[in-house]
Image 1 (cartoon, rainbow, N blue to C red):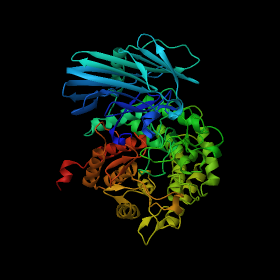
Image 2 (image 1 turned 90 degrees about the vertical axis):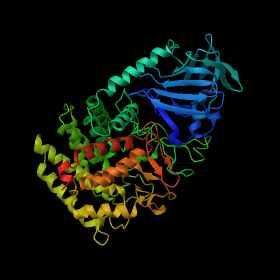
Image 3 (image 1 turned 60 degrees about the vertical axis):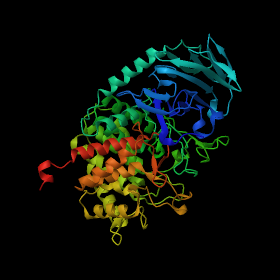
Length: 595
């Protein structure tokens, strides 16, 4: 059985990533990029679906782990009755082929160790042909994929696995290197494991030194930014929403989706998190990815794209995988790419407006693309859609979608007020019309709150975005009433659920964890409403949900005290960074707090 979600660590090379559990097992690794097939898929099945463990053979009395400062280089230390060892895991940032480096160092005494490598291509479905390579390595091949493992200890086959046993005394070091390459390409040169670890440390340390945040929560903010960088596909600039697919929103449930793609709605939040913390190159790369991805027919704008901007990411079920703790089905691809969601137009416009406002170098033809998007939205803003949560039920007039349509025209007007030419009066009038309609049809005076969709009596945490995008000021009584309603009806164990689930809402069985980004949005609302102490307390609670390495999933089950959903989740880490900035900016002056 796979470990608890929060018991995994992330390693990555800014093109793909792996998950390592506390015992030293890599249970998830997709090669050569995030959305490729997994060669280690035990996370969603059993060890027979692929994993790589390096661990003591004797009982472990105590284990600890940490990332080296400012990096994604992982050290896991094990203490046994006979001694102690540290395993260092990393994926060097690469120009060409991905590799995983594992180094075992003896700290004291002598520790019996073992390794077991089970390579199964295509999410555990393909057993490769394995042969010896060099003095002590192996080469595994099947179809288009080759994996070579180099080792300082002799490897041999046993029951369709590759194993080795060895002893590590104090001061000794043994290294392993795994490299993937296409079957039609000559085998690349070998790995100098110790040099690769040192270079990975230097690369990450140089990157982390650029972090401009110097506030109270610097350590956790930097860790979140490193996680975002690790989820970035360096060659395209796209940012994967998570490193995994099908980790369930509720253990044993069916809400299991593939998040190894780029969501347009994350654009503004991600852009601001990067720019405000000094990472302008990454912000520009994200903008360029966004412009390439959304170019073309504005009626075909999607909510998500593949890492390279590819549009078709058809969904399928992997029936041979039982799912994380029996949470089936396991899905790859995501059918939501073909949904109609109006909010993405607002999110694209807002992201590009923020680039303009923050004086990022202008992108060629960006305004022409925005004009085409706005021309399309003028005639379609009042259509029903599937909404921000990608419900698989009937389309509705979702409040959040209308607010984001308003946002698109608001940002266009603001852009033209700064510079440029366009039909500013027409867009200003349409912006005001949308605003009036939302206030008439989405606000329920009886509830004292905005509601999920026109005519509904249900609450939705996306309503917390209303003041965050400037649709209404934080102090507006309608906003305050909405925040109070969210507190009453969507909070569970001090955290926020996305919406009130029901089969007629999204066509799926009810039940999921609290949604961590929404909980951060409540922090932002409280901070902007001068409820600073409450906002700070909740932020500290959310930071406390991070695992020992500072990583967050998408959701949290307050009943079981477990992380749920895909991991680590970019949107959760972006929200953490932006809430830390909001709290820092809105911290009351000491003399004012004493009044």
